[in-house]
Structure formats: C-alpha cells, structure tokens
Length: 250
Image (cartoon, rainbow, N blue to C red; front, side):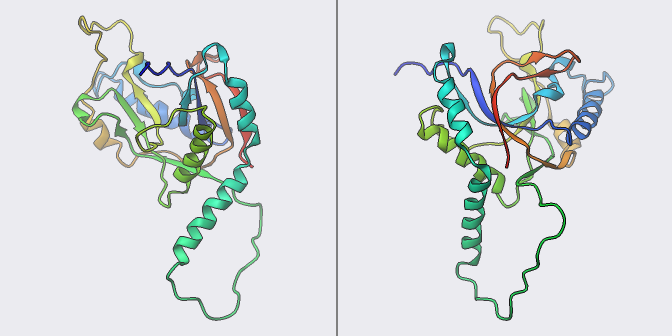
C-alpha cells in the first residue's frame, strides 16, 4: 500500500472571532506568562501556539499542487449548516422522547423573544495531554465543553460529507475536537539527539493547575473554513493559517 500523502489543508471551525479575541487573548497571555516563567514550568515560549492559530480541526486533506482543492471549496459552499444542525437536533429530540410517556395538558410553548440564539456556541475548558503519559507530553490542548454532543455530531457530519466525496481520508479513530495550546514541535534549536526526537515535557502539574481553566465561554461559531497547512506571520506579529475558503454558520 503506498504511503498516504502529507496533508496540505484542513477543514475546521476557526475559534478567533471578534467576540472571542479578547477572551482568548487574555487567557492565552496569562497561561503563557505562567508556564514559561523560570519560576514555574519553564516551557519554551515557542511551544505556546499563537492566538491566531486556534481552531477545532474537523479533518485533514491532501491536495498536491492544489489538485482537488477546487472540488473541496465547491463542496464547502454547498453546505447549509442550519439544516445540518436541524437534522441533528431532530434526531436528538427523537432519541430523548422515545419511550417517554406523552405529556398531558395544553401547549405551553412560548414564542422566543429577542434576537435568535447562535446556531452553535463553544466553551473551551480545561487542559489535556495528547499523549497517554502526561509525564512525557508534547501536545497540550483545550477541549470544547459539549455535554449534549451536538458540536461533535455536527463536526462528524461535516467530516463524513468530505469523506464520502473522497476529499478526506477515512480515519480509523473517533474525532477528537481540540484546540492546541502547546506543541513542542515548534521549539527550535534544541539538541534532541541523533533521532531528532520531539521535545517532551512533564505536564502533570500543568494539567492539574489548569483542569478547570476557562479559555473562552459561550462564543458563537461564525465560520467553517478550509485552511492551508503552515501558519504564517501576520503584520501585527501574530500567526494565522491562510483561509482558502469559508462559509458563514447560518
């Protein structure tokens, strides 16, 4: 079997918006100041991911010389997030009411007042290690709070759509939604031996300290995007991924 080509693009939910920027910036700055301090955990600053790179990855794709990218962009633009979520919530309601006794009494449904709520909101809370042994971690991430599983099912539906179009490889593992906060692969100039092994850190105390840390709370998801691998420096000193195409979450 030939080796799978290296990914060049990814489908994601960007997390940095006009609403979230202040929350995420303050949280990330406080975290970075703490864990990079020589009096604390002394993690190299290069390991902390820049604000503009934060996102939830839905799946990766490979388009050598951009072949196939146009098809992926076209597919993205056919998506109707509102309908996808309506189908998910209808299935959730059916599962909840199945086997339940019918309610008695009149219709007590109230007309909603004020602006409609966002289709999806994200809260990032806590810190986990991507590696099984937290004592030898190289990637730390903040998971989204998703008690009802709606966010996960929405992203799984998007992933399935791109997989069925043969634009995204089928993964033999469940989708893990995560916002990468620390990744030691970006630490340069470290002597890691002949094998060039990735720098690892003992993150056990860090995970304990940030177990209940809220990075951002109830932030509406605004876009679904196809981005190009490799974050680039921005004029303001931040880094961000180049967006090939995006649609509004409406």
